[in-house]
Image: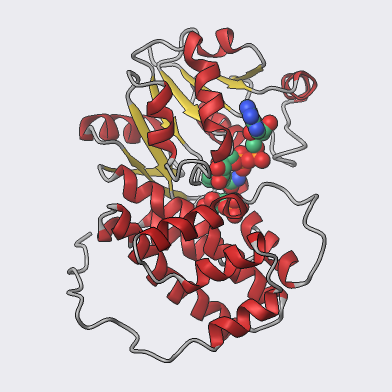
Length: 337
Ligand SMILES: NC(=O)c1ccc[n+]([C@@H]2O[C@H](COP(=O)([O-])OP(=O)(O)OC[C@H]3O[C@@H](n4cnc5c(N)ncnc54)[C@H](O)[C@@H]3O)[C@@H](O)[C@H]2O)c1
Ligand SMILES: O=P(O)(O)OC[C@H](O)CO
């Protein structure tokens, strides 16, 4: 019998656990705050991370990894990208070697430049690994609003099985084999959403916002491909799709963080914005590969080098004019859906 455990009782972990539990499965949600876990079990709510959502009875929260993982055949890892290495190590003694891991974080490990699957494979080399990404706000998913995402695994049969298992009436999971492409799209769109938010915070207008999404996508695609992603993956749900969603307004935490940057508001108390932690390493990956990524450069300069936001915008606008597309490049054909 298939059993799902979700590691990380934040917004996305709680939403995914609720989704599975509503589909009739008994799901364990592993948190680390005993008081919050007790509150979830008592009130059927997670007011800190997912206010206003009633959680199904079949969802059982716990702080005990042995209880959560002991019988799990599928384990969703849903903690911030920078915590994945230590989280994977802490789970190792409790996981069955055949338990399938679905990595749901969107980021790049700062210290190594690795995406989630490579980080977790370092620690848990035997467990089958898949990644889940794509345009999906936790609140939308938890409310049962229609959502389409991508699940990638190198083993295509595993991707098909997990896509089938995790899909539900309102949650469509498309299987894919390009793990790195899905990871690159999910991580890089967060950095670009900070730029979109900052532009909105400065009051630069909707035209500037559209320019950032479009030119940001050029950077996402250039860098993604240089890292080994397939071009059509970056044009799919986990690339262009998630970029559009995350740049679309204040439901995104990355956009909100950027908005606060643009308005010179305090940033300390804001919720997790993964782009903040991926910007500098994305800039390094681009520079190492000779990839031009001026928007990513600007975001990293603001966050890491404390460049004033207006100065970063001025430096983008002062770049020499050039052709929109590099004609020496052969554009791949559009994917057939
Ligand atoms: N919220 C969304 O809509 C959404 C959607 C898709 C993907 N994601 C991705 O999912 C990941 C998690 O996001 P979230 O929204 O759940 O974040 P969150 O801030 O709401 O929750 C993070 C959770 O991780 C836990 N955590 C933090 N550090 C930990 C550690 N060292 N060990 C164990 N647990 C730790 C926290 O206690 C919290 O429960 C991020 O990479 C994010 O980009 C989020
Ligand atoms: O709220 P954000 O910016 O972390 O975005 C959440 C999801 O990644 C959107 O797909």
